[in-house]
Image (tube, rainbow over all chains, first blue to last red; front, top):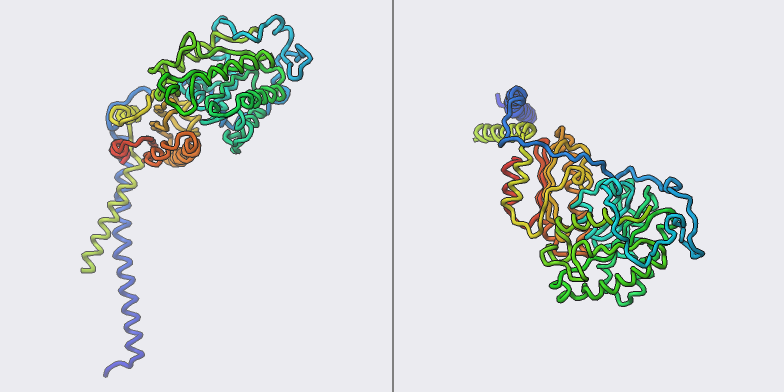
Length: 307
Length: 151
């Protein structure tokens, strides 16, 4: 006797369900068996895996590391005072101890001194652009604080949020306010060589010095001469020329005298007699190769402020 | 036909699973990998070997047990970084840090040297097991070399 339509439907549903269960078993069971076999095989051979080629000694630096992105940047506050700050003149911002600077001629570059070692820079901050970034990296100056950024300028040092401090981006000068330091090296200017007015550049540069003095009145401040570029860059670039760089450096030297900060003739580290940067000193005539960054560092080690 | 397809499916699935398990136990000589990249990849800038603390500072990779970092003058974004971590999970964190560096570098170069954006777009960032490798270059040889070591 043939089944009714309803019964046929129920039988069809039941058969379909059985087929689905069978298919599920078909998929899952073999997969579990293979997975289990693989897991057992690889856990058993994990200790005897061979390397691709011979192993070499790991290279680990023993130097301590402090950087602008380090979450350990602390508030400078009153911890940065190393001497009782006394004004050496009536001009505002002159808080370097008069005992140290008495008789020092700020109009002249820092003279050659006994070489210091790398630890001298433990409490140093470097403010600069991409050239200083390269200087820090090539010299592995991880013990100093690097407040550097590609394209940084004397105005964007206050405004552009590029330094990571405890997970938050802030400007270079704001990051400095959160840093413990006793000396600051500044090299800025090459990115501003296209500015129309040199006095604006100097005015904003001096704002940086004033702000450093507000944050830490006793800090030793070094203005670094802007390094020259190669002749091929100077003669072809739209605005980066050694003529402009030299003009800025003359103005910076006068600022150093005015503000009673130290001026380092850093260019002598990599060239002489006011010559352009050697053509083989930089990949693009601007950014120094490692060998020249090392010369730069050696120059800073042998040109430190009197104590 | 259905049975045949099912068997094929199972075999493929098993192959995928064995690949994942094998990857976690990979062992790589990071010195050899980084040197091969230096020798065979064409770089415009002069890359020099830096130290592990600089690598940690630039990449934020705090749990690396060993690394090799080759960096340039800053004129270009070219770079090689190879890390070995203590565990697969640490390597995953390291991978995130390495991947995060690319857009950071793009941001710093976009107004400074816009040509470097294309180089950063072509960068290779790979992770296998406890290892992470990064190479910023326009040369396609880098991906091939890294894939041979980290597969």
